[in-house]
Length: 349
Ligand SMILES: Nc1ncnc2c1ncn2[C@@H]1O[C@H](COP(=O)(O)OP(=O)(O)OP(=O)(O)O)[C@@H](O)[C@H]1O
Image (cartoon, rainbow, N blue to C red):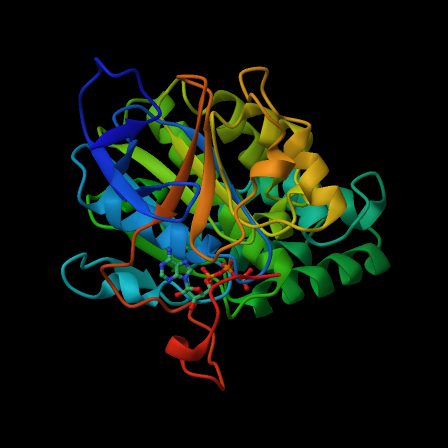
């Protein structure tokens, strides 16, 4: 099997990924992805091109590799199949995190408050002084602030409580570092509370590696990544992309809108898995990262078929045409169809 992402003389765990695809569509040798070292990867493609499937294949491959800990962040609730044998992952249906895992400075932003205005600065102060949302809510009435400021802060903290994502027994990111995938199902959450969970988990895994508190290399696999950039989770995701490889955290961001990702996501990714893309700005976002070793334009080589991808590997400065393998576990992203699979063209326009 050829392994993408490392030099041919390197060894170590490999994620089984698919097969080479010749220009005439015929299938070639098996292809794997290097997971011996942490990588930063993006998986892009238009709707239905196979991104979630590819993310699931990577989670399965990581589950079978030694020394890594896959953490799948699942905003659409489509990765529940990873619980099935032989992968035996754990799905966290309503994940919560500790309130004090978010830095106090993030609280005004979380609640849509101006940190320099009275209510925002009161919330910031309460977050710095207390260790739970319950304690923050309890302390607000006695706070040294004008009644209307206390009222505004209390209302916003009540809103945060209603999301149900802050709990003193919330997930400790270090507990997500086992060999089988942990799937955080965020499908029941709005964007803001979901972003809070992503931030705490992404940052917590990074900090755990910096502190040498976990031995496995965590890999954060994030679907619908465009929903999490520019918001509360942005700084934690940037940290993983730009600095995660040094302490040892892998990251894979999947999105149908690469043009909505920060430039750093595409430029920092050392593996770019490009499924079918048609929208001009999205093709341009990927083409802008076209490396000099790419002998023809990415536009000309974009795959047309579902489940096929170009894999651009900066480590070895190579580009690969791959058909991603079938999933081992049920594919929850499979869209219901009126026309059965066998009657449906696999080409996506
Ligand atoms: N490599 C593959 N082998 C077999 N089936 C695949 C493959 N890739 C994708 N599929 C199937 O194609 C359909 C669409 O795939 P998927 O849901 O992964 O697309 P997507 O790009 O994530 O779409 P969306 O943007 O809507 O989330 C699913 O039914 C999936 O099972």
